[in-house]
Image (tube, rainbow over the protein chains, first blue to last red):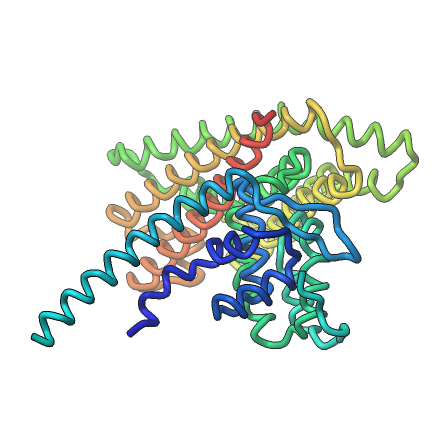
Length: 108
Length: 302
């Protein structure tokens, strides 16, 4: 059932969240997303997302180091991520509050 | 930043192969990074399948930041040239089979009008191709000769040689094998297929020359704009031929052109051939429209 609610784990959002604290290259992003968010991003998915986010100006490439090119979140990307996080936070708070009420009523 | 484990190059052979499915511009920008990631993560079947699947949107919606204006215009020209030639060939074959075999369509305004539109659209298409293509062809030919590039010169001469060779073949065949009623259906089919081959060779020549010479500038822009007009005209011709075909299928099932003598003695087979024709025209037209639109956007972008 919870599998149907996986929209929160949109790869672009995960990549933006991963880049929110510091620039990362492809491997570092996949590791970070897997460890902190429990989602495995394949190479195809990751670079499809990177190319799209880059086209939208939400991330930007830095100079490559040892053939690995790090990406950095832009100001526009940080703003978009903050807005989305705020919306998700409101939904999460609302859902938790209503679940508590509902569970309380069910237990009464 | 996470440090990858020791590299295991070579384990991701399948995924590396899948990477070849991506557009050249995409590969040029992200290819080396993906290869490093595959080496770091080991690749495997899942990675290969994921890469292959994601190659489809990379072709359909090419990332804007990879936009190479001149390369986009050249690719668009190549696609429009080949699909347009094939579409023109299919339409002309249709016209030959239906319009020039003596079938009387008088009294059927839809069919007669469609043929008139078809003829006019083909003329517009030919004019646009000549006006837009000739300057680019001359620019490339001049450069190929100046730089003594024999192969490119040969490629550029193909649009002249291939049709002449085909016309000479047709004349010889008609002289040797033709009777009072023309040639047999089998010979007609062979000559038609040969014509498609000649058209493909005529297009392949300039396409290969463009890939090697990489022309830029106003001649390419003019050719792209002309390709847009030619595409619009050939699509109108295709639609007109489809309308005429629909009209014929409604009013003229007794038509006894070569096509019917050859392959389709029953009504069901006639409908199948007509449907097949419409499907081919639609597929070629959509491909040409999409590519012409991308080329036009590149020509107009700053």
